[in-house]
Length: 144
Image (cartoon, rainbow, N blue to C red):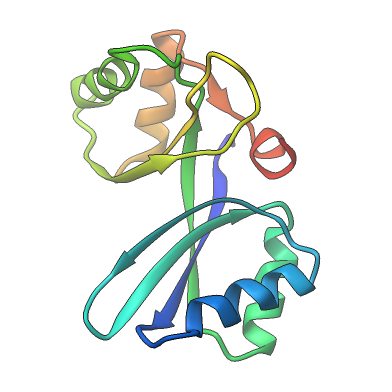
């Protein structure tokens, strides 16, 4: 399947906690390929895609960080007005809900890759493919 493993890490909303977490990841030679941070008053949720997801999970577990994993879809969007709208229209037409989305780092001119968390992965993948929308492979996501 062309899904990407995303790790959501719960971070106390205190000065230095985010720096502590990212330093832990960096010191393990794990590359943050993309991230998104959502916060509440007491904690934040750092959603990351890394180059070594299995190693990152072990690292987090061994260091007592609370986390969970989820499958997400990466889409190779054209970097132009309407690119996001066209993909969202395809997903909507398939009667799938987008729970959240965020941009993905890439080094390819003309592309604005995006991560989508949806409530029906199989239906979304089928709809995207039938509309000739390119899916980011796990290897592309993890290794660029």
